[in-house]
Length: 357
Ligand code: MRU
Image (cartoon, rainbow, N blue to C red; front, side):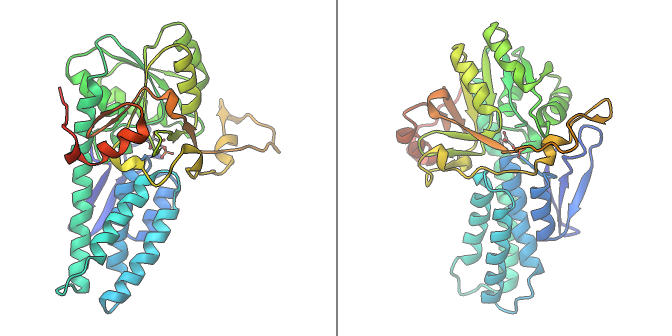
């Protein structure tokens, strides 16, 4: 299963429509950069690395749509499209990272460059980025799996599996790799209100991988942790600040607090493209506020439960302070505190000796 695909014959992006899961596995074409912007905003495509890869192909589509007669016109069109793509969701830094990586290719000075050449360079780079994402996930998963023991019960928040990346997964990727190594693992799947990425997507994925799981409501995590019924907490990240504060799906902070209070280790598993050294601390990370209807549209037995005039708040992410994070697992290794010292070292794979099981 690959969440993000480029159809070479039709010259279009094909993605899994995550809004329809688990009822239906449907691939849909995205044929314009604006369609990619909408798909990211509406969470047809979601998960930090997945939206980064989708946005990269969004820029390819923008190049193909451009009516620019010369390179300068094309670069102007790309700059407008890049702004639109980056603004579609503000918290996950992978989005801006991927768009900037492609812009860098387009802007690379070369005398042989013409409009056609830039279009094909952009497509090649987006494909490279997507392929690398899978390889990065597999490397990260191997590091993550060293932290998982036979018999573990892990609380997992949101969806960090194949659907959230191009393929394999980050935190769920580590759990998959550990399961493949023969470790018996149980996952307590936070349902992850309000969009239910846990009970809809993570549960659906774990079922396919044959990994035992049970869904819990988000407010049950403290109970399981305090009773000793879960011994590890794993989740992904949308942006990691220079000091190791982690922005991730709303509810992560409460989960990490409860885990720390009960001496349970907390691991965030994320590619180095989620690390943003330009942001000093977590409270400076922009937090997306989504439509309150996502909170209000809850139904029980087919009936809406909240009063007709009810109002709601809907921040999509929260920030877990570095003191609550036991380690950050990346494709370059497992990073421990002091994060402000260690994160820069691990950003550059050449500067460290990679340790792998
Ligand atoms: O709003 P979403 O579903 O895009 O949020 C996703 C998350 O918070 C994930 O945990 C995060 O992107 C890591 S995905 C590997």
